[in-house]
Image (cartoon, rainbow, N blue to C red; front, side, top):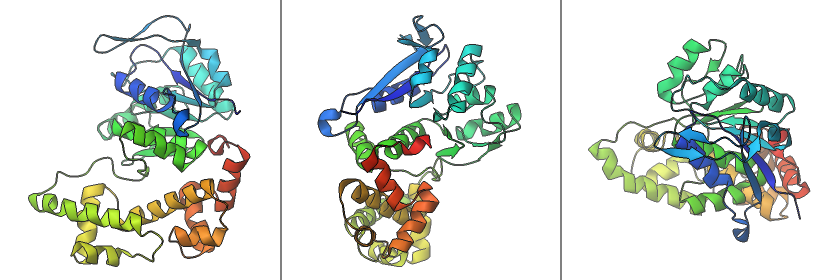
Length: 327
């Protein structure tokens, strides 16, 4: 039996209760009876025993000292209630050591400021909540702040936008380490969307009354597309099903979802191919056909651009038990 995947959540006074809850919900629940991997989530703090106060009268009880990060497969930093809260020096040192060892390090929302204090984001791309982007730029000018994304990776360091984007990043990290099916199992348990790409917009404009009326049509189109991914669907096909011109359809689709129809369709095809690679021994041309890519060459191109790997390497990573995010 494989050893549990070890996650270290870094804790200190000022961390945000919502992000702590997200991390705990994703990695702290035992879902092995539903086919999810076994996780070992530990709450690491400077001394490993002192209660960490949080806003709203909540308190967190650490169960490991910071040196447990040396054993972790993944380190996650919650956001902050006050985004300029200084992290304790031992926390910053532990984060630097973890990254130097090659351990993936992820920060939710304002947790990017903690990584910035450690110098880990200098000359790297990063994101935070859209309302904090200017503050992050001002306080840490060496960071290449991305103005609008859900989550981003640079040199094995992950940062995420605010609130719900933290869920997206956590599920994405599960997907990379354990596969799309594992992430989908956890997402179903949390009753949340199993797949939103990091490049989606952080927020969408408030819908107009017309957009409200179009919402059901767009939902029907997305459901139809998911049922027929193996067919050579195009954006024009989806627009026709919605009863719109391609241009109007693209505008309403992007306003409703934060991404374009083509990007959404390709992302769903990649996710379908991931599941087939994880769960079947189908030949690559058949995986490409069933996921709607048409050819292995096309599928390989989209895997390279979205996952920075090939379909064959992706399959080997999961059948061989290696960890794709700890490369």
